[in-house]
Length: 592
Image (cartoon, rainbow, N blue to C red; front, top):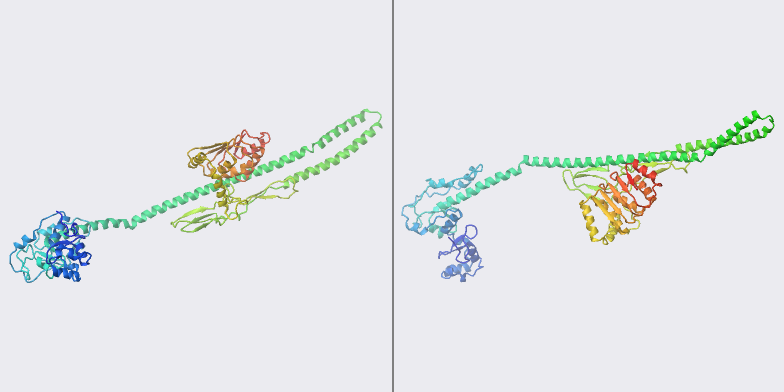
């Protein structure tokens, strides 16, 4: 069944387009059209329903009619409500009015108990399905409303059957009272309409109680405390694991630093012994002269016993005596030189000094809570942490990989220095993020200058090579292999190596020179994954081995690097044999 507005043609409903009657004509239109008529949005002269009612048309033009002057069509309203409740029962209001009996309505006019709906709402304490059909079978349908199918009760004003209820006044009235009487414009319902409406509202209330009961569980303190406890525990575990991992790496780096310093001490002391041996070899002729003189003296004694002419031996003994005295002076002088040289080598102490002020233990690792600013050692970079309960902790990264104890300074022997004079060689701890900016634009920061130089080179990188380096970043292969690279490409590789997730790097047939090793291994020191480097078939010389040893002493070759291959270069194996042996003692294999 379609109930349409006779003006706009839209479906009538009980939400927006309520059915309303035009006074005096009885035509039904929707509430929106009534509002447009009252507001004169629609010209009243063009509405066919008003053309025969000049008085009402004049009232509309003079703004004398309001929305409440157009009463609700209770019959259609009831049908719409029944349609909504899916229990459609056809109503013929005219047949009811024609079959009414004329009996007197009691003088004590009864009204609906205003607290009925409130009592019903408060009686629902837990989710349950209400069944209000019981009201239909009771004599007292609304508590204090004392009527049940009052077919014989008449309106005292219009002498018509009392069959509808004015909900606003809470009293039984006739249809004329609802349309044109004092209850005009009020909310009018029949008894069954009231029960149906009450059923719908009670059902909505029941569903609301169920929803609130379910939603109230989401704000339970115990539930949120458990979630918070789980999240905080997980946050604690992550922070502690990270802290332990960082300190494990710190201990490994300190152990590696200790091994490097021990090896330096061993090498320095071995060099002192070698220097003394070399110096001793230069004085061995005196010992030989002593042996020769002793033999001459023994021969002279033999001649003294065999010769009869003793006077012939005088010249021989005088010569031997003179030579012996001269030899004694040389021996005494040599003894003094030996003692002086020994004291000199012993006096060249090897000291290890810890400068604890260079590494502030209270600053290099902090626990950061909330949005606290973290300032690095060089006060150049600042970052703000997210306001978590425990944001994170940070370890200052301004120290080289194997130079966490950047305050360590070693003193090594120097042959040119006098006895007991100590030459201290202090190692400077240069932050890894602080680059050389001598030739850069002074208006740019070190990082920006470096990035600018990279961008100038990056534009020349072939697409195929760029795609290959992207795969190395993602760890799709364990070996990075490059051949026949130009010098510019070597610079690009140096800036990309730290991002690669590979275990081995091969740079072959690329005319790699000795002075390029420093930049290459500086980049390799920032990658903890690489264990092997193959630099075969390049232009490296004996100087490259010394450079590698210097880089290892300076901590630019990390403990993760186990093997360096430099075969088929310009390196003389005899000249670097001792250096390679020293590398092997330190756990690094150099393959020629």
